[in-house]
Image (cartoon, rainbow, N blue to C red; front, side):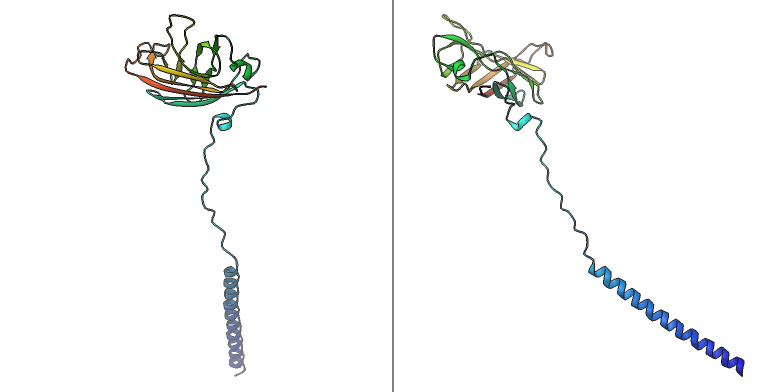
Length: 211
């Protein structure tokens, strides 16, 4: 009898212990769920649109030590645009553009600028007398002829040809522009047989600053 009583007492103790553990387990699970619910979910960052940085220095601006800041645009058989600083051996912007006796004025150039590696060779007004607009004439009967812009971009070269026109504007502060239409492709190192039907229009603007 005593043995049976001891076994019954042991079983009773085990049942009480199991009940206690089960209750504690439920309490622990409840407490953990409460803690997890109180922790805020991490914020999800929305993707941010980032503009690609322009490879043109200053996005249209040039370093202070350049005399001219030039922007050139070519459209047609070749499309390209670039902005670059250009030096010049002149006293001041106003002196360069000043009115006076007829003289040759050489306009700003550009050398392998931008993605299209734009080069603008020597352009000049042959009979410059002061600020204003000049329709370039490559052939004249008197005085000095003007010189159309010669452009290189994308490995192709364009200049004056049949039907081409060009107008230069020079302002009193030394700023100005050139607008040329219908420039034709000419032979170059890269292209020995130019396309006779290829044409481009050309626009160039510049500002002048005294150093």
